[in-house]
Picture 1 (tube, protein in one colour):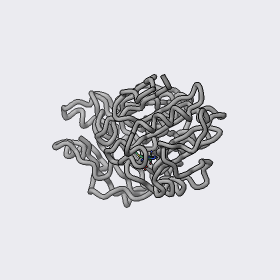
Picture 2 (tube, protein in one colour):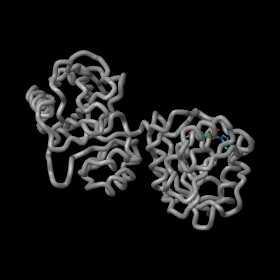
Picture 3 (cartoon, rainbow, N blue to C red):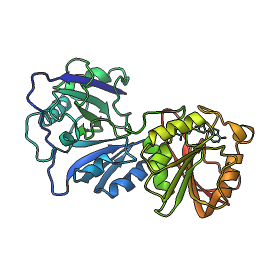
Picture 4 (spheres, rainbow, N blue to C red):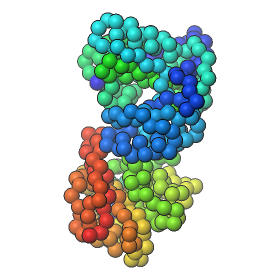
Length: 364
Ligand SMILES: C[S@@+](CC[C@H](N)C(=O)[O-])C[C@H]1O[C@@H](n2cnc3c(N)ncnc32)[C@H](O)[C@@H]1O
C-alpha cells in the first residue's frame, strides 16, 4: 500500500526548505514508530516539546529543532511538516489541492527554520527522493511494494514526479500521506532513518530493532544507581541503548560470536560484556536491579546450553539475580507469565510480521 517515486532535480536551484507554520513553539513534526509503542513515543516526545495527535504508528508534536530531535530513541523516523491540505478526496479537485500543497512545499522559498537542511550532510543536494503513501500504511521504503493502483495515482499528483531513481546519499526524502480528506507533505529531518543506528555494524540472527529496544528500556526505567543486565544480549542492542542510563550495564550471551559482535558494536560504550549461559549466570543473588531481555524463542534463534534442555531455567536464574524491588522487561511471544513471575504490564507490538509482547514482570 505504499508507493515511492523520485525526482532528479539536476537543474534546480539549491534547495531551501520552507517549514510551516513558523511559530514560537518550534517546528511541527511527526515521529513514526513500531506499532504498539506509540504511548512510549508520546512519553519521550513530551520531554522534547508539545505532543499533538497520536495515530497509527505516528505521533505529531511541536518542538524546537535541535539535537534532541535527532537523538529520539523510540522513533523509527522523524519528519518536519512542510505543508498540509484539506479536502483531499477521490475527486479531481482533491488532486489539485494536493498539487498546490506540494508546490507550496517545494524548493523555492527561503526558510526561517531549516532544521532538516541542517541535519543533512549535503543540505543543498539537488536530488530529491519523494515518498508517497497513504495514512495508516507502512512507512515509505526504498523498493517498497505498493497497492495496485496507488502508484499511478500518487505519481500523477506530484509535480516533482519523474523517473524511478533512488535518492542520492545526502538527498532529501519527502513523505506525502493522504488519509481521510487530509494530505500532509513532510520532509525527513535526519539524513537517514533514525532506527538505523550508526553503532550497529555487526549483527546476529534475531537482533532487536533499536527503537524497540529503546522502548523496552524506557519501560524498564533504570535509575542512575541501578545495575542492568541483558543475559541473552546477541549483538548488544539493549545494553548499548541502555549505556549511561544505569550505574552498570552488563551484556552476556552463550554464543562467543554474539559477544564479539556486541563488543564491536559497543566499542567505546560503558558496557561489561562476557560469555555466559543464561541458565547459570556468574552473578550473585540479588545483584541486578533491571533485567531487560529478548530471549531465544526457537523461531529465529534456538536456545543453547542449559536453556536448550530447559528454557525455564532462564527465569529461575533471572529471579535469583534480581534485587528486591527489581523489574524484568522481556520481549515474549505472548503475555503469559513465565513460572514464578507476575505480569505487571503487557504491550503487544507488531514488527516484520511478528507480534511479540513487551512484558513487564516481577517475582511472584
Ligand atoms: C533473539 S537473540 C537476542 C538478540 C539481541 N537482543 C540483539 O539485539 O542482538 C537471542 C540470543 O540468545 C542467545 N542464547 C541462546 N541460548 C542462550 C543461553 N543458554 N544463554 C545465553 N544466551 C543464549 C543467542 O545466542 C542469541 O544471541
